[in-house]
Image 1 (cartoon, rainbow, N blue to C red):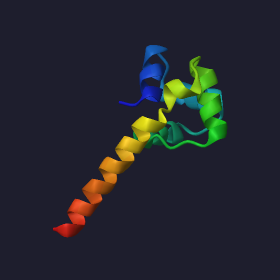
Image 2: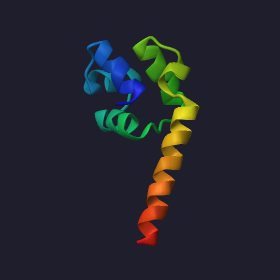
Image 3: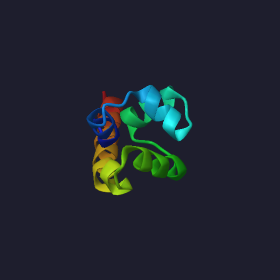
Length: 80
């Protein structure tokens, strides 16, 4: 579970409510929570809506680790 979802749940907020607060469709919140992809504009809005700093939501080192793991998995599947 990523930090956006953890903070959202801690605030007892649904994805629909968070989406309305930042002006996006709820499916975009789902995408953010699954893949950690978000534009800088919405990252700022998310942090503000959740009452946290952006670096608490999006840790670059953590994302880099997931990116490397995903690439290694893809490479392993290609070798099969």
